[in-house]
Image 1 (cartoon, helix red, strand yellow):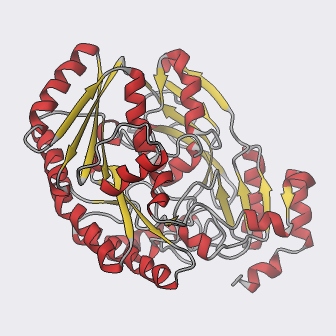
Image 2 (cartoon, rainbow, N blue to C red):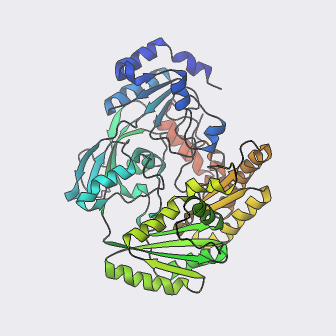
Image 3 (cartoon, rainbow, N blue to C red):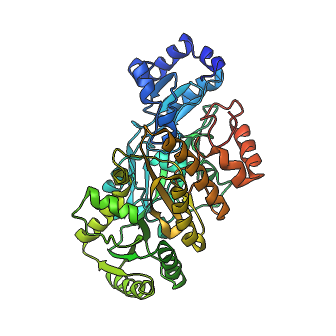
Length: 478
């Protein structure tokens, strides 16, 4: 239900001012447009879409600033939005108000290859940036599965990671500074107003306060990103395991040996089955409970050495092992992993893949028992479920598959999602490692963070006393 006080403030005077700021063609109030902006990729918004009252398409920092000033004056909620590939309801309305679409702010402003950094607008798609960096032999390392769709502004807002976080870290490790519109409409630049340095310890680290704040503390309109060289060579080791627990034990053994793969990905038996259903030509072992894909990178000699060591470490646990450093074959193996999210729905005739409980992270030492526990939870509720993800840093994605017209499955899958989140905390982990909190994980925040939530709420109240920026998200005030 929309907040009637907020709705009453969004009158003709406000709409007229928005048209002055953005132009009439970039201010939308029609029902079809509002429905379009009422979803992201989450199960939550598919069940409960949330419409704003007006959507605007921003093209500049000045427009965003003027819009936020207007919203703050009238105490109208504002929701920043990029590609809406998020899975937590983080980019939808909770109280009507104004949706600011930043997806058209998508310029790569500068590639400063000599200083190993780039300046971009938030609507740049991750893969588009990396394609632009290739001629310079550089890359922006965070590599989410949605790289062909997600915007970097959304990645920064959620502190996203991806396939190679185990070696290269997450988004926050590559943000040097940003231009931000605060809840008052004031514009600041973090990391030094004119700086092009690759590091600084000057002043409070405001950028890292804003990274992962999910649009609740400010709206990022320009980003200064650190870049790394492209690796010379990559090698892939694919191995299968008769039991899930052996896969978890193999990951522990690899790290204990001193090896540092650039990626370690897991696919359980349901995921490999689904991939083969979608792409039968992909060569994957099926007589196992889990498959691990290890990637190592660096100079060719270094890759060869790491692969030989890795084989010796995992051989006691695996029943099948294959290696390749041929780019085409490596790409095919990665394609198998990248198809999982789209293919798991095939596991059940007429199946619908639910994005919920899909982002937990547990300590490496507790991987084996967590992998088994998730399958036990799925069996408890009679839900078909695949497990996959970035197991090298303990980050696992679960893919429950249900029939939407089956009321019992619709009820049970939500119970299953609750159990998976609670399992993560029980295992000394977290309910989200890269997708964010948004609406869907807000109810676990106090359980996970305790008294630290009081500090988070105090920061929110200080920077946004009128609570206009993305209200109701992250268990912050509504």
